[in-house]
Amino acid sequence: MMKREITALLLLSGLMFYSCKKTAVQPDTDGITITTPATSTSTTGQTTTGSNADGPSVTGLVRLKMSKDSINTDGILINFKPTAKPIYVIGEDAPALQGYGVVTLSSVSSDNIPLAINSLPLSGKGRSINLSVSSTTEGVYKLAMESITSVPSGYEVWLMDGYKKDSVDMRQNPSYSFNIYKADTASSGRNRFKLTFRYKVN
View 1 (cartoon, rainbow, N blue to C red):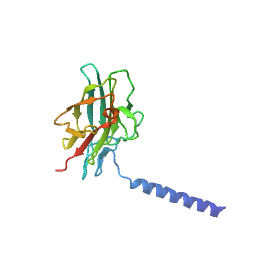
View 2 (cartoon, rainbow, N blue to C red; view 1 turned 90 degrees about the vertical axis):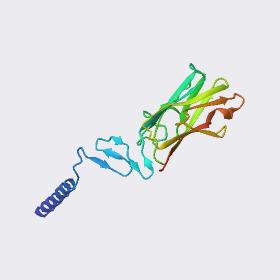
View 3 (tube, helix red, strand yellow; view 1 turned 180 degrees about the horizontal axis):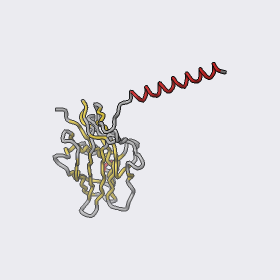
């Protein structure tokens, strides 16, 4: 009986020593910012913009609007967050709801969900986002980048028109006019436009 008690006591002492040793080697990180090559993250969980060999990790906003005239419009928001995912995430993204307006604009997630608010990451490797455009009537429409906030100037922003085989630098020309033809389904839908971000390496 005495032997079993001594053995148990030794085991307990060993565990207590290991626990104390493990605790002692943990660094005190209260209020210290831990920096990695890609991003800088504080111990509060807040992610800030950092940089690496591929370019910066971006936290920024882009607002786009499609319009037929001053009344018939639809807008979307692209929200760049280093921690976001390109797929649709409930509570992070907002699906585009089918309304009764003349025009409809949405961005398309990587799992093919049309979104009114699209949160996703943007690194130096760039990003292409499919845009879905539709209308109840054919005619001339305009796609405009209304604002771009906190996206570094090192990123080029190109609107790629797959139907016309055309492209436009939206930092230089933030508005693009195009036609939708009801008899030609390729002139609208999810495959006509892409918004492409390219990081320029100096």
